[in-house]
Length: 113
Length: 116
Image 1 (cartoon, each protein chain N blue to C red):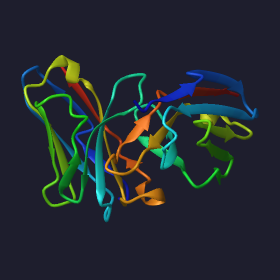
Image 2 (tube, rainbow over the protein chains, first blue to last red; image 1 turned 90 degrees about the horizontal axis):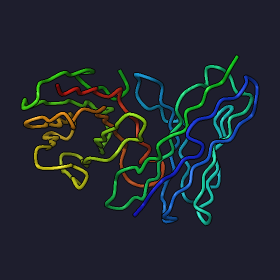
Image 3 (cartoon, chains in turn yellow, orange; image 1 turned 120 degrees about the vertical axis):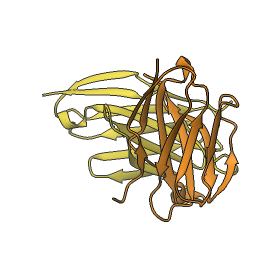
């Protein structure tokens, strides 16, 4: 069974810190891995998508890496800001006839001013 | 209006009633997905379409749940004879389809369903 796990479930850091969110998946036959941000009462915002042939993607202060062999992805947030406070979800796309994403439970991030 | 839209945003219904949730995907997106999300959990897959064809409905919990996308654009998720356990956030997503970056999924704001 394909499962995605995110650790830690919650994280609180002071403003300005660099931080890493972790995502692990049980099936390495992954096509894409997508990171999302979820704000209360709002939808999921796509942050980064890493294809299986890539090792990392960057967008602004965000950098996501993918290591298929170890079944891990990390989301690095540089110079965190209070506006980064949200729940971050990772999701694996196994492609083929399985069009759906398999999500982790998320990491709730709180950045204190 | 470039994003995925869903309506209603909130729906409160009584047990036993039928509900219909609507999703309007990003224009030109071939694939459309329905997910359900409980509090403190990630979204869980329900079903998905390529154009008007339902490709996979393995995530639908039981036969009270059905979905359609008759013209390959707007989709409706219908829950018949609702039960309290159906209460959740229902999320819709769309993508260009295919593999690689073309399958990046974009989500709507969701419909919060409460069954009393």
